[in-house]
Length: 235
Image (cartoon, rainbow, N blue to C red; front, side):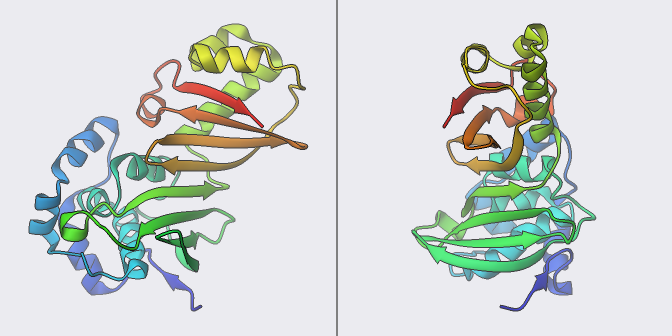
């Protein structure tokens, strides 16, 4: 498959996306998301009900990398847009589509930025909402670093050092208890990915054959609020 850059996309696509404003912080993000109803998106950009999934994904990445939160919030679900922006899929970066694969009612398109970072988004193939909007509701980010993954990295560092006070500041009760009482080693865990789904956001790690998934509230992490990590699950 040919590789395509979506940092700017075609001039027509950039012009289409230019009217929606610039990506901003949590408060502004919440305001922008409140505006991205199906009717608002359709009035702004027309219907995308029949837009091919491959193009749909490119337009979401184009919206993110041109700083257009309105368009990004139309193509993607709110939590997904927040997480992608937090982990570095932002204006001024260049992401190239390198692979795509269909399955289970979705097209999974993978984009890379040439530095080892990648993001895979899931685009719904059918049964889209009116106007065809918000059809991207899941993503996986690898080798990215931002406020979300940085928050969980800090928690695991505190856990490894046995710093109960810092752990209690970063982890809610269930997550704290699962980590503190875990009988396994507290060595250096390697971060694998950030997973954004319609039911939540997780940061996955591994140490040898063990796995660990931390569920995190993205809004709390972006605002540096305490106890943004809600659960910790070992596998």
